[in-house]
Image (cartoon, rainbow, N blue to C red; front, side, top):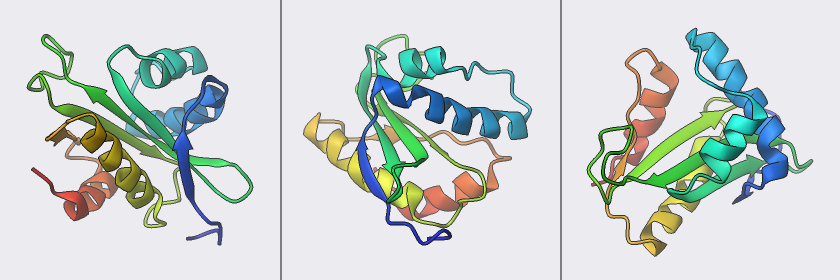
Length: 143
């Protein structure tokens, strides 16, 4: 861990939306994206979405949110064009915290959620320009 903190993972709650929004905003700004990122969007799209299986946050010992991971069930006509019944995963971590175990901790917990909900395959589409995410995902190839 780069900051010496212990990571724990727990379910995201509506009150986490501002901190999650700050992480998402930082990342989307780096990407040059105009995607929605405000706390209301985070709450609706990640924490309380009707197709949501789980939304987990990684926190340090002080309770600061270091990252989050969303797992949705792909339904017919989903925005991702993913096969219905698959999971759709999105992972976001604070910039500058790469290679610190955040993604690994989140994915371990999300995998359990997927299994509990009968999800056999997870789509994690990653932009070719997102080198950090590509490197992370190579360690989690599952079919």
